[in-house]
Image (tube, rainbow, N blue to C red; front, side, top):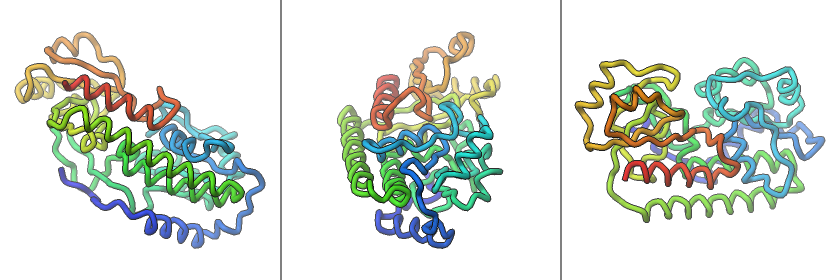
Length: 293
């Protein structure tokens, strides 16, 4: 698997880069009027923020669950919240182009994609081949990325709410420990590489932790029906008699009939069915492992 960027910056280097961005933007000069002065863009980022702010006020969430990518819009009330926030954290336009017109020019906005950090993969076509000069934006599903994001959020929340700085950094450390235990628990369940299909390729960042290998997708978008030629190709190339299909919603019976024998598991990549990031990640991992067994 070819990586766009194999490097995950060390905690010290990552935080130094983040602090430098604050200084350039002049954000340190903004005084926090209340503890709840941080807004975050979408649901997975909100769950990571919740892990950091446990015991303190939550961040404001701009997009609803299910609106992680290009879908959903922000209201005048949300725009007002953006303007009044000390910091607004989002992934960036490649994922959230519905926010780009507002946040690209917002002086208090922090785009995580703007930093030379995190493990990054390119997008793949329906046959699992990498697409040059692209970014698979689902970076939060990688455990190391999730830990790096919480470290960044601890810094951001600390500057918006200095009195809880110790709490935020302690929570980020606790999150890292929980995430490590969750990954270790899944790795104990089996080390063999397991092939799977996806309706839409959204789970790449889970693959190294779970020893998974994508061998094809039904469609390039979960809103688009698969082509007959792609279904035929999947049937001809299937490495196992019974395949696992990971999908964001319940597939049509007729589609499943064409793919038989197949097991399915419904997994929302934005974890919108969970209230806790580590729990949601663990449940997703466990269910996919069961589907591929």
